[in-house]
Image (cartoon, rainbow, N blue to C red; front, side, top):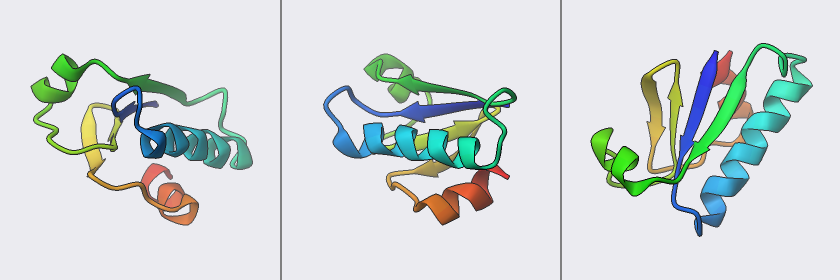
Length: 79
């Protein structure tokens, strides 16, 4: 599974979201099966039609945009 977190480099919510995703994955003992990447390139955000960040893409499908779900919500989204 591939997870991409979209957000600008100065976005604290975006960085925290990536950290929370990594924690949820670790808590579920799936860290060797899931790759998490943060995308900060504004061109890539625009190409996905993302006007607000943070956003989460899982295996090519945008699952969340414009909000930072709680860890419990992330667990439901990812698993």
